Structure formats: C-alpha cells, structure tokens
Image (cartoon, rainbow, N blue to C red; front, side, top):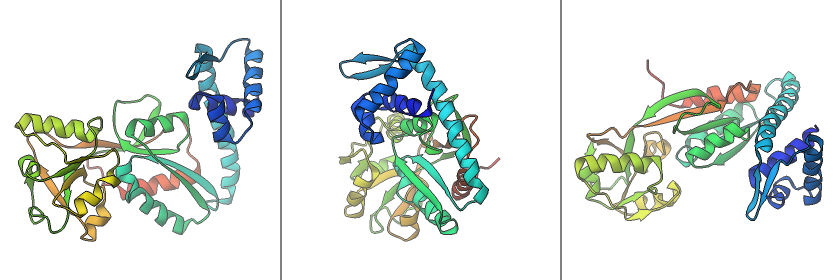
Amino acid sequence: MQTTALRYFLAVARDGTIAAASARLNVAPSAISRQIANLEAELACLLFERRPRGMVLSPAGELLAGHARQVLSSAEQVVTEIRELEGLWRGLVRVATTEAFAIELVPGVVAEFHARHPGIRFELAVLPPAQVTHRVVQGDADLGLTFSLAPSGDIAVAYRHSLDMVALCAPDHPLAGRRLVGLADIAAYPVALLPRDTTLRTILDAACAEEGIRIEPALSANVLSALMPFVHRSRGLTLVSSIALQGQVARGELRALPIRSRRSLARGIEVQTMRDRRLPRAVQAFLAALVAALPPVRD
C-alpha cells in the first residue's frame, strides 16, 4: 500500500466526506476517490459505509486506520530522524491544548523556545479537553496539554498534576483585597462562566450544591477570552485554573483569589503524548521546556 493512499484514506476517515478531505489536503476529490477505490480493490472489501450525512469507517476500515496511522507515523519518524542529524536547527512541533493554557502559558513557552531555536516551527490547536486527547491519539498532535478526563490506553502521560480553581477579578473589585473567598462571596457578585458541559462547571456546580449555594452566571460563553472583558470592565468575576492568565495576574491587571470550599475544586491536568511513539528530538526538547513551565509535581 502506498503512503499517499493511506494518507488520503485517513483524511476521509477523519473529515467524514471526500469533499472535506479534498479541501483539507488541497487535492482533487477525484484523486482521493481513486486512491480509496484502489485500496478497497486491493483488500477486496469496503472500507467505508456510505451514509446520507457522510462516510463512516466499516469494521475493515477501522482495522486499516490503526495500521495506517502506524505506517505514516513510522515514515514520518524516519524523515524526522534524518533531519535531526542537523541537531535542533529544523523541526516541527504540533501542540494541542485547551484555551486556558493557550492564552498565555503555551505561547509564552513557544516564544522562549523559538528564541533559542529559531529553526523550529510550531502548530498550535486550541480545542476542548476530549478533542486534545483525540488529536494526540490520532497522531495529529505531538503533545497535548489538557484537563484530564477518563484514562485512555492510547496515550502516555508525561506530566500529571492537580490544580486548584481560583476566582479572577479586576484590581478595583470589592473582593480584590481578600486573601481568601468563599462560594457565597462569589455568588454575591455577577459571575462569567464557561458552559455546564465543561469540567470547570461540573466541579463548581457540585461544590455549590454541597453548600446549598446557587451561582447563576450573568454571562456564559464557550471560550474564556469572551468572558474576560466582562471581568475587566465590571464587578464581575470568573473562575479558572490557578495557572491560567498568570501573566495578567503578575502584571497587576487581574487579581487571583483562592477559594474556600467544603468540596475540592481541583482539576487534574496532563501533558499527553501518543503511546509507544518515540518523539522527535525537537518535540522532546519542547516537552522538557513545557513541563518546566508548569507547577512542579511534589512527591
């Protein structure tokens, strides 16, 4: 099987249609259709179930997808190892992360790393937590930094820690001078929050229910960046991981207030890689830099 055919096959499996794969790869739909037809003829089976809303992998297609990812990963590894003979002069690092870490933390590490190794290029994808892990499993990202969800046997965890939730407010907020706030204190002011289907809301809502406190957000949005103008320009607060927006806190643009709660407000975070994959040298070096920028794990 040719790697080109396998690459086209995986693109259709990921995007669900030949048209979408064509747009992503910048390849004519007829070329993709021809390569998939050749694969099906070679294997004497259907690789996709054609449905009204798109194409879904058949059982045989699922088996081939796993094989194709390994083949393409191995081919990519060979190319990378050849290029690595030049040291850290060249390379590509693909990072997937959640928005909480994409506003300041990861771009800051990228900037510092790139200053030392200007030949290294980066691709950063900002996604919901489950999609970060999916990108790593599929081989579409070298590293994933995300809030940990259900364990996956297809990933290796390079870093794992638990981080508390804090309340963020403007420096002139009435609570800004407090060293510690309770959930009742937060509920007394307008709050901007992420949607209910996020890990943050799940943990927060459970803690509020245990204390009989109701926090109804004045503003709800599915991205943190949409909440921050509300916090900066009003008496509003938002809740984030303790390492999110640390730069703005350090510069005095925001105040981070620890929260007192009967129930833990901590969330686990992980730096993930694909299981059993040897990372390219540039990725290994950036992984070390990223972990060094995260809170140290105490024994």
